[in-house]
Image 1: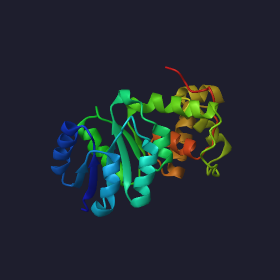
Image 2: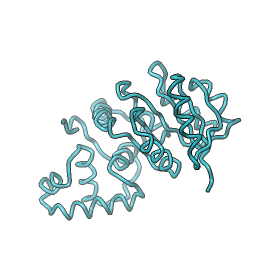
Image 3: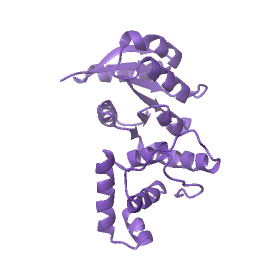
Image 4: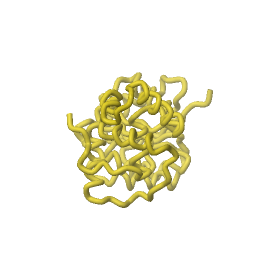
Length: 225
């Protein structure tokens, strides 16, 4: 089995060294380099040639710009930003810049290892603790008429697009069924078909796909818990 080569970037030394130790004990992961900052990572990424960069969110930096710069130097690498919940990372910006993930430092070891494997296979992963913030960021961008993403054609039907819009608002299958006056099982089938068509795994990835493709306008409609 090919090992995932990782460049680990984090200015919290204790966390970085702890995560590095865990990763080095994992049979499918190889930590090829460690450093403290995005700037240092830019200098190391060509030499280390990682499959994945695990990048600490740095509140005083333009993280989407750093992600984009890393991918210019190493376009085949996957970039996963990892941070504390209270840091409120720019999730939409990170994904649009080409990042594959926004992960929580409070995640369990098993959850992080599973996330790294999925990211390596091309999946987009957002830790559950960031879901509400992600939806709020989407709504905020739509309110201000953000036009940074070029619109791409939707490969799904009109009915499926209606369901995607409701998924983005946070609606459950039961709520979607009620709003569209269809059976809940029909909604489940639609969601399953949508994910299959788009080669996605879950609703979080569906939300990311829809927003980065600029399909839907959710202005001021995000569901509040």
